[in-house]
Length: 281
Image (cartoon, rainbow, N blue to C red; front, top):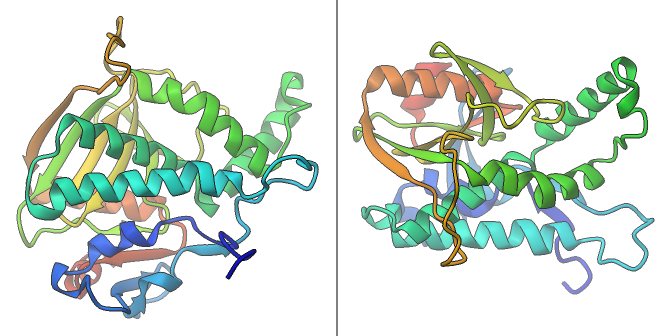
């Protein structure tokens, strides 16, 4: 209905959750995914259209009188979600390796997705409040999420994107990655010990051991090594594509990744099958 577009914001896109449904069911009008709340033992099948959404979540403040107050959702996340779907449909959806263009699009989506969930929002606001009490330089920093989200998307995103090495982790069939309502998350890697960062605000996001973890479907996960590749870039083609490697991961690494995803989840876990949720919860 006109005027209600983008009123409900899916902070984890429906097109992303759809990948945790068997392909034969993609054509159904109502698509069900296995879900489990962190504080419950019950596993449910739920409609993906009703998951991970909040009304007017990205709406800019009323002070933006001359701007479209829905512009964050329209210009940034709507575009990002479209890129993800296009890249997946060219590659992993049909069992093909991604092209360099697909890798670029999936990296773009992964970084945008990391900024947009309620858990990231709440953690960012708490971090700003903490910084205000400990450092006078942050006294004037606003706690409004829309302002900070705009800054992250336009200023921080290019810095994170610039020096990445993308590891494409592929599990064996039947050994699945799960996902969550906070699927794209930051970690500090110290001697193979991952420490979760609920927000990167207040963090030196140019350190060399900063990682981004996001499963793309039940069998493919991106481990993005931020700031890994230093040096000059060749921008003659106008589109810089980060280097990437692909490797198969065994059960012990899938376990580590799934446990990390659960640690970073907000309220809900999702899986392609009931068995995966039963195993980890």
